[in-house]
Length: 163
Image (cartoon, rainbow, N blue to C red):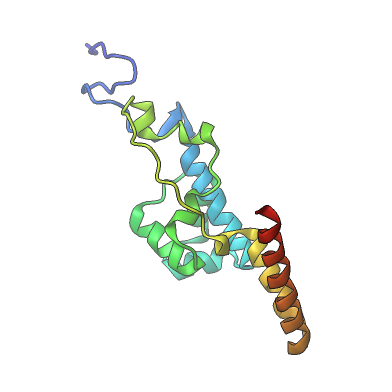
């Protein structure tokens, strides 16, 4: 005979871990992390197979991480950050509020502390990576230096315009 359970609880009286946001679907946070893995991997021009080799997985396991079908553990996330050359925080940047609301603690009704205000790493942004790649494709060092000086000048003048 099956025991009756409260909604959101397991048969043993424990609350759900939040692994599945709804029955049969991965948690949206896991999907977001997977999308960020895919984004960074493709920005680097790396195949799923090469990434898998670098962290000791098959390309099928990398695919599952990228789809959010498999949750990425902290040690694996550390390895991914190292291989993809990004801080661990990169995988959580640009996460929509609706996705943040699906965290296991939020699903369980646990109160969360106020977030710490910080500036995301501009080096982890796609725009920055594209700019750096384009910059280093300029064959003449003197032209690169002039563009660098122009960019600094523009940034300085835009700061003084805001005052």
